[in-house]
Image (cartoon, rainbow over all chains, first blue to last red; front, side, top):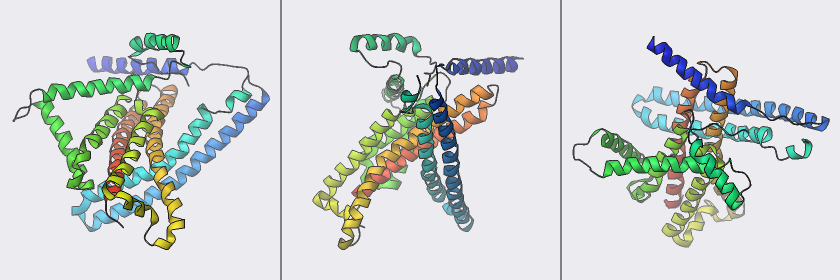
Length: 117
Length: 235
């Protein structure tokens, strides 16, 4: 009974913490703003997708090399793990660069003030 | 973007209003990264003072834990930079521990990661960048420029722009990597809370903890490798 109560309290906290952030501000948007939003949506979707393809292939090759290295020489697994984690983070950062561009386009677009009234 | 709902808002909202009115600041709800950076700094300094005030030969629990942390960081530093690199241990260990605490603080609901803001990350990355060049000049003198020339002297017109761009890309990549990871996980948690707030954010919280620890490790490791690369002898 106490565990269910604790679970209920945690989920209520999560719900309540999510709610105040969702109040978006409405404003009057013209047709050129809708056009801009459309192209932004297409650009972010394709851009992030292409970045994910390259990241997937690159990290897959890295993990392949690491698994083969550990299979040949299980004693060196500590050093191989360190090199693997570092390599994965470096490759991941390329997808993160693409993600940052998407976030800028979506949320901090410098051209938004010219089209939104 | 709307600013989040945080525990320290009781203190910061009157403070930001006061600063906005007194110093005519432009916007007063984008200072959370400074507030939380000081918050985590005060927590870490208090813990360090409490532990080092009475060091025992047979350590208690907190001292034991901190000894494990410091010992782990020291072995990582000596593996990467050699025994010669121990003079950089305060900076590297501070970066590691601060980034770890700052990243993990954002996982807790109601707290904010200062590393989810570009300014905090850029300050740390620019510090590391300036330190690499200062250390390179101190160790090598004018011969530090030989590292930019490349293996043979007649490839210099090709190698110098490449090396300069590569060096300038390092603080940028350090900053954006940490910012993108931590801000991205904040945003994904936000979206997941909007879509499915009951129990579904739990795997995302696990992923947030993992990437927080990993990004702290990667930032520190890259900083060590850049500085040891500036200190090492020629190719």
